[in-house]
Length: 484
Image (tube, rainbow, N blue to C red; front, side):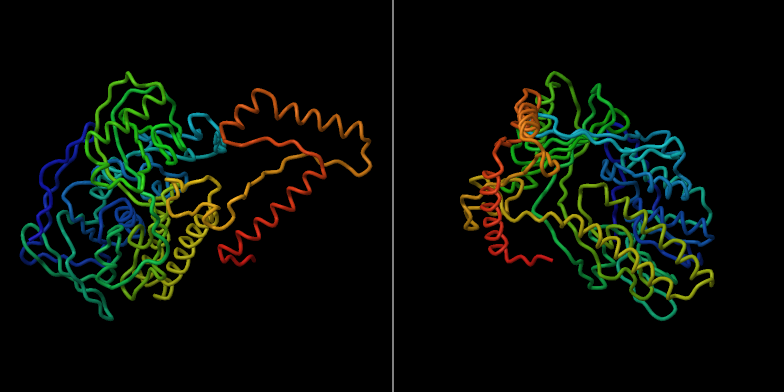
């Protein structure tokens, strides 16, 4: 018998509500045209979109309360538009923190600032921070107010069977099992999808070695709402840490684990505290008091099902694909799944379209996931030029290990002028460019990146470029790469 947690989760900022488990009474009809497995953001948004199109649905939620912790926190303008269609954007905007910019640091020095374009006519900010537990709370409230949605708390799908007219479900609850039927089953049950496993479906793509710890702390930092990215900080060399400001004075730390650190070891309170304190000290906030709210570990993945429609079962969100952690692609991509499937499934249920329309959902969204995965994999690191492997890229060999031990990479910068330019002009431009590169402001930033400036004549440049061409040929051969 399924026994979900019946005590409110502990939190410094979010008041968790425990909902009564659903079990149909004697003679009660538990069927619905659509049943959605999973009551996370994607499942709830799917139900709300279907309701906008007049379609009734049951949402099976294994737990009796919303998700623990911040989890998905950054929502794009497009996601806000979808959430607006679902009827919750106005509520979200009363809590979320909008932002448009971010800073990137390498070894403590700022090396890049991101500014996202905005327009006076935009309805929503480009990016918006809100913890997932708050988002789910607002979605639940909207669903409760919608008579076409039944939230089935404490309901865990244990098995199902398809036939030509629908899907037979076996559902476990704290009050025992019950069975019911549905015409269509939507799997929104996350990365460890029970529906996907029972159909024997496998995700395709890559699972990377990179693991990240999420830590939510309550702390008062006088900083704007921006994305902060620290590459190779002094306390975690070779690795990455991201920071986001959240509502309720909560700050989110995502930091990368070394390959030799287990997830269990990383989540020990003393190790979490040491990492947070080291980051705060690097930022000059070592005297600030803080409290721990929640922590977890996640892995970087780029995987998708090759097909999201299997007869009367459809997949959305993490049940369909696990996308790279950077670029806010996870939940934001899932919302687009929900929007696309919502109107197409509604058209089929309402008799306005043939079931063939559902296959276009699969085609469209699988291609979207594959495009994201392809973009994530474009910059394949073949080898590193440092003497030893980097903790950030433990599986990437050094140049010496690839048989190109004397390789040096160059980024060429220069000025191009018309043929026949007078020598005195060329010399003046050369002198000015050299002076700029060697100025204190520029040289400091260049040195922070570990880059060496090498002024040279045209003949010297030719010699170096010829040598570099030979080295790249060796790398391409060693990596068994086909150039297209």
